Image (tube, rainbow, N blue to C red):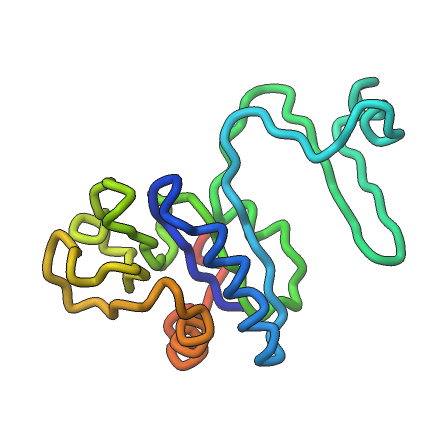
Length: 177
């Protein structure tokens, strides 16, 4: 499995990039999973559904499955911040690429998504885990870099860059146990 993070401030376009990158990787015959960092309390379940009622009744975990998908919901009894590595360990073993959205301070190799128009600082000058920058404004980058500069609006080109450099993103889960 190969793992690459996509980091950047809110509004930089990480989600849109991944939504375009996933089909570009799938078109190359690759199986893709995503680990997404969510802030605070979020829910994928809805009041009135059986699974919601089970969770409200106190179930620690609820797994719901059909012939098309599976979902696992786990309630933490105390606030818990799982690491990106713990979340990757939860994924199906037969995936080719894991795209990590968020986790901007993690120790996985990352591509920084940066837009000058968003007005946020860039992280690449201070983060050795950032291996490339995806941007729509390369001339406006705040610091020179030897890292590859990728066109944020060309997900197919970015997918090819990932495939061409795939060995660099090989993930060894034993390192993080």
